[in-house]
Image (tube, rainbow, N blue to C red):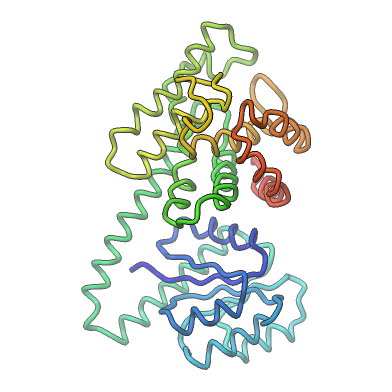
Length: 344
């Protein structure tokens, strides 16, 4: 069963973080900045779970819940409140029909467990109402599970290089979120944007084929070593490109092209400008930015401001100028991601 989840918050970054935290749950997530639009959607579309913020303009969370209950008495509704909110607010929400509460800042494990429990209850609720649909729903669940396993496989592949490299899962997650944030300004098709988000963690999977003596060297590489290091792009491409999975095929392109440069001085093929696939151009900015702020055997971590200045200084030479322009525009959100998803 593929659940229909609606997330409502007037802060775009909060919506994005919730989407990320729901990443391992088989669900279609529809996010709304405008609670009035969200209410209209819920009135006209089947919904299995609603996550709603309390403080919103035009329609606060309590009113939203009360209006939702006028047409749907059963859908689970989780109100997300600040930890210091007045208990009267929570009481009013319960009276309006809230099912559950979660406090900000959200804790990943607690959030996922509670959401999974509510969705499991929702599934049982639906099956009890319509036993005739049981077989069909189980088939859908099996199909969705296959899709979920594909996403899980992507995550495992993306983290494979961690076992040799000093990069962390947090680096890979941040790059994916930066890429989705920036890509959203260019890509309006949700499936294409999901492909970018789920495939970008594969950018360095080819490092599993690089000798440890080079990959973990605590100093600058010589010319011969650098030539070997550069092959991680083609190793990654060769590893992924023959897959029938659209995600792995996109990951192959990203792996091969995220070190190409706008001026043609990159590798492995010296592509120039828009010859470089768009996903590769986006991940190039995200990967370099996050790598600069991360500790490596050959360097300390840079500050957020220094890493930002470097990206801006390479606009139009190393990086696609349009991508860098959006990067600059999104700096407040990028900084929040960097601060929220820190290395362990």
